[in-house]
Image (cartoon, rainbow, N blue to C red; front, side):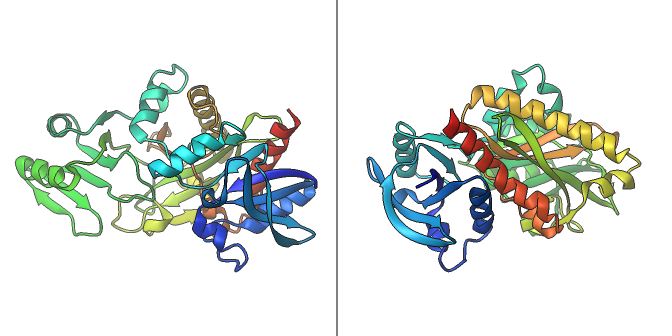
Amino acid sequence: MRNVIGILLDRKTYLGILQKQTGYEHIDYYNKAAIELEMTPFYMCLKHISTKTALGLCYENKKYTLKRLPIPKVIHNRAMTLSTFSQKKLKDLAKISQIFNGQNRHDKLRIHRMLRASSGSSAFLPSTIAYTRNNLDKAISRYDSFFVKPTNSSVGIGVLKVSAMPGQIWQVWWSKQIPKQLNKEQTIDFIDEKVRGKSYLIQKTIPLAMYEGRPYDLRVSVQRGDKGQWGVTGIAGKIAANGRHVTNLARGGEAMICENLFRSNGFDPIQKREQVEKAALQIAESLSEKIPSMSDVGMDIGIDDQGEIWLIEINGRDQRYQYKHLNLNKTFYRTYETPMLYAKYLLGK
């Protein structure tokens, strides 16, 4: 059998392979890349992995075969391991295999603190503090606008936005509700009730550049490739839906070619893209010094109305579908090919 590369999936995704019901995972692209690189993809989930072997699906000769094989030497992790059991099993697996992107859910406040200690990356960080009721009181005194975000969630779930209004009134956006207009004490009580007992942070609002009156940011796919070095595989714009404060496609946002967004704000599209790529690579290099297994991330990067670049957050399991929305099929494919190139590089080492 040719070089075997393990691809670790969530159980639901793994069970959907034969029915071609794998959600956001475009499994056919892994298969195509593996064929071109003369490798054999071996799809697994943690439930079917024992001490030394795994039961999984091999893709060979354009078909899947259920096999029990020795644990592959290199594994690309695409599973979300949130439970204590799954985290322990992944940790045990890492003792006998080189797992890249093993940790793919990153605490936002921890990431911020890591980057704040890096001289090269700290300039891209908006003001951010841990949530406490006391810190919320300070934020209301210091900022005209800020977000209160869960430190461990994705696709914009649980995010509150707070903005100052005339007359010492604060406007608070929460979920799909109509924004509330509250005084200071009411604002603090409302937010504290929503987040009490959970891990949240407070982040000063970036005055994002706008497109047709709607704020936008960028999803930047940053991955290690065939020589083990970081590269930017693709960039796509995400525009918030009318009246919304988050740009996530899953929350009604719209994908757009990033160069078109840059032009709409009078930015040089080639220069601005180069600046974004340079910033993303700097951030990736800084983080991988602290988290060595990090190798495949989606960064949400904002550009303010003056053209300055800001890191909004890091997504450890970039779902990549923004490129499919934009019919950027070559870029979409490369986001699957690049991790396979990196896997082959690791095998060669």
